[in-house]
Length: 111
Image (cartoon, rainbow, N blue to C red):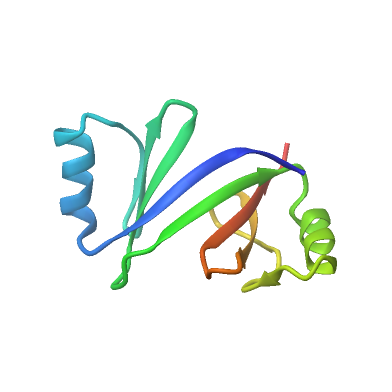
């Protein structure tokens, strides 16, 4: 079962420029920054910036256990683009598409 909207990630063409805009122009509080990703806080939701050539929105949905939800949704015919996998930043994820091709990422964290 989906517990909450965890993260929205937007693709940006220039990470440093985008960080400056979100931090200095919009006034968002930066949570973290790596060479290939940055995060900001918007209330209880995290906004991620991901440098990529194609603009795209990724919506992260928190679940208790990615593997369990992956299996349940796959049985219902959901088309997954990735299998569950551990991420370097501590989460476990699996990406799927809705019928219109919008991407959603199931995410869980070890307690």
